[in-house]
Image (cartoon, rainbow, N blue to C red; front, side, top):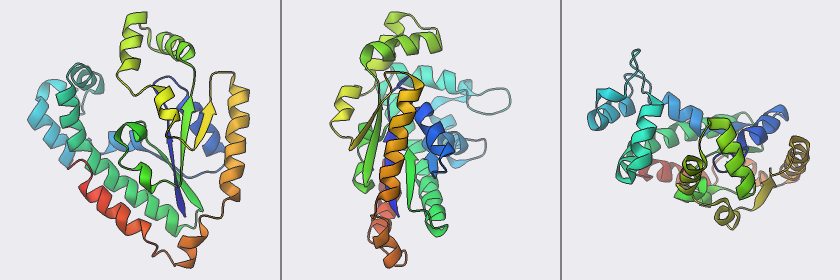
Length: 227
């Protein structure tokens, strides 16, 4: 089995691509979903976040108010780094569990949907392929303004807080250009899916009965990443 890293940028349309991949039966592990799971009340990460950010970021039901926390880390990079140091190890541990589950089930490859894949760069070395969902800057700005009701200045600030999509293109092995209509994007995803299905890179792991070298290294990376 091999790993495929999928990423994009804010309002680039990654969710559209993921939806098509799921329709095609691909195994997709969503880091954002896991990120919500690992900070549920009474979890290790939940307790650590409260220690550093206080109870003001809680909703009435005890869950973390993601919007309130997001406002803090958006304007304070040191707080964002602190939050990452708490949540990323827990997220990566759960991702590894799910990767191993799909491996046992016999999947040829697993797609890891990681929003900050190219920003952190720590996991890219474990990916056989990396896929970027791209759109041109003008389209990205307009989509974000429409989706979130932001002004031009607010939307530009959100976009500039991430690594530019043009920069990410340099690191991706495959690019899905989502600047056009949905059908154009779908056709590109279908071509990508065909290439992944035809790849023989999964064979080494099967021939080694699941004892290939990548899994121990991935486990070590998960254990030490962002600690």
